[in-house]
Length: 610
Image (cartoon, rainbow, N blue to C red):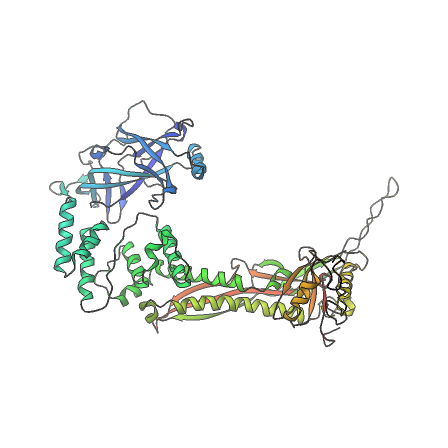
């Protein structure tokens, strides 16, 4: 119908690219048959109107929403051998240089044209399929894309000089088409006729002239005007807002992303980007209605209950909510994570079986070979092991049907925020328990921090009463002189993190400042050498030193493979009409064998295991 942009594939000839002029020759159309929804479409090459095609845009995947998507212009177009060919001139902008290079090298070689048809011929082929042949049409734009649909499109290595009848178009119908009595040529109404009919439809429905003008400004079709008229009549007896019908020629995934971004901005209060404003004030039920219409599901006459119910049976509408919810969930989870997560080594687990971690002792000193015929001696090495498992944890929240129909998304957003914080809190509790719980190590049945490990210092503050750093110096020395698994090899570990509870935060900052608290002339050797981590869940006056986990990891934390973070999923609740949202995470943490060498503790009291 008039003003409807239609798309089909084309082809290019990469070796015809001229780097000096940035031009390339392409085949815009061969007129080949393309399967559409409910019919087969053909283009009559002779019926193509090439007037005005010079200067038409060359786009990136039919993106008409941004000037940055313009890759070039059509410089010339002509018909030859049953094809429409064109010469394109590509842009010299830096932001599209990579795309232009891929086109020149033949990496990107598929095109698609956007066109409008003003006259059709209907027929039926020998297979009984409905066939529509465009007898009068014009090209509006050409786009480079990843996949094309025209089987006649091909890559040409140079401009063809030999004529061929392959793919040639003819105004006569193909031989395999059985025409019902005669070809029915349907003349599309003029713009003036369409506008007049829209005004008549809206007036009969009780609408205003402004409403009719609004539809005309949107370039709505007569069918869309009838749908809007139904909404106007429904609004007489209810407060149902009128739905604006806005067409789009973008890829479905691009539209979905804009819908998700707009919904995210709306529920979080963030300012929408210009490309998101179209959907910023769109209600959930209107999102659902549009998605059903895009799938070809009739929506005229459906109640809001039916629209939301049917929308949940597709993948689009649940994806809109789940995608937005996952974004809120992950952002809040990352913001709420404990700083203690940095102290451990990160890994992944293939399943829920115990993760057995093995540590082999150091090789010790290498022995000289000795005489000419001497042999190398075997080096004995010991090993220790420990294990932990991945756990699953989560919760379920129901978004009621009433909330969906009333467009109340505050509860949905609150759940995403709370769930993200809850997952972070679970991790925090597990790691704090590993550190302050001071569990026994599997290798020697001694506590993580103990006198046997020489990493449990006498209770003290970080700074003494005189402002000296003696406790911190003693803790650093204890880590430096730790020996390897063989009890001989010096590890020479350096602390990287100073970990404190809330009460010691200011004291820790003072201890890491440029000068001592006592005298400004004394340079602080710890300034800049330690990174301060404050965790309020720790005992307020406990403090610890940890080495870099890449050198001496104390513990390890793992996500289940394929689930690196909390996940949001949803399903319809058949009993309550609500939409159930489930947040689940698969994560675990455990001490590593021999890991006690990478940490030193200073507990506030002597009641810890020692």
